[in-house]
Image (cartoon, rainbow, N blue to C red):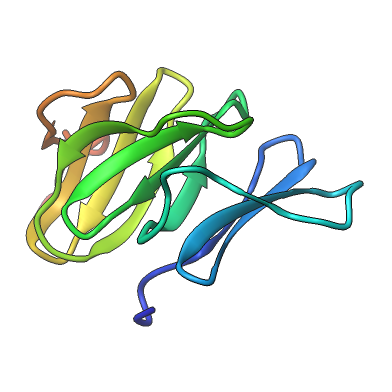
Amino acid sequence: MTGTERDLAISPDGTRVIYLSGGQLMVRAIDQLDAVPLAGTVGGHSPFVSTDGRWVGFFTGSELRKVPIAGGTPVSLCAILGRPRGASWGPDNTIVFATDGDPGLRVVSAAGGSPRRSRSPMPPAAK
């Protein structure tokens, strides 16, 4: 893990913790003692959770993916350039992410597709 990767995420309702252990993402319900491995996440890192708490997004060496938090098959969303700097799953079912290989923020649908540059929500400062 580098200084920019975060290998811990908490579901929006606070009932689950997702973390990296032994090279695989794990999910643990707060009311349980044992964690469960998320299938298909070996080599995954930098998890984040959908706003409805049903999906875990994560990065691999070259892709952004998602997997159901209850278990299931991971889905590839898009290719990435460089190391991840972080991601956030929005209420409009889009994922905003950044990498060190691509300047600025990128946006991709949670259903997958080609990432596009994020439009700045604020106008540039006047000189």
